[in-house]
Image 1 (cartoon, rainbow, N blue to C red):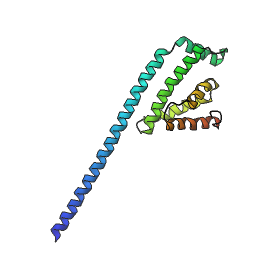
Image 2 (spheres, rainbow, N blue to C red):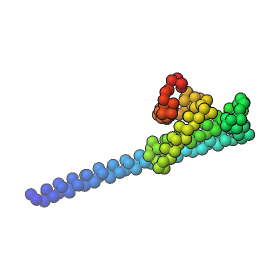
Image 3 (cartoon, rainbow, N blue to C red):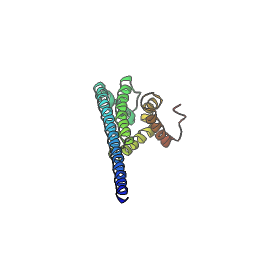
Image 4 (cartoon, rainbow, N blue to C red):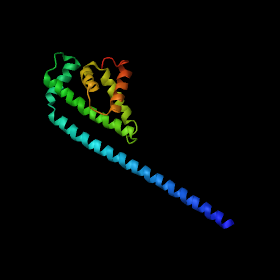
Length: 163
């Protein structure tokens, strides 16, 4: 009678071991999937960023920055376009930081630093128009848009300006 009891206990430990090892395999598969998604997103973003930077005419961008910094004057269409391209490029990088953070793959503090720069830009009247375009636009995932709206409310206290 003693022998079958030991055999049963050994079989139970073996079954538990199989279940635990399957759990580890599932976790490794999830990590591999997350890494693949992150790599795809980063490579797409890199391509988009290269496109934006290739279209950017730097003299218009620097001219717009001078006007926004206090030199005065209306922004030309080219200057607005240059500011928009740089804003979109920065948003791609920030979206990637957020996505990596959501998957637990971001470096410590990377998304928090992006959040702080987003809040600073949201508070700056010179970036107001670009943020209105971003927040009213259709790009990005609903969760990303929601996070940006939460940051907007932290800075401005309301959402009514966007709607």
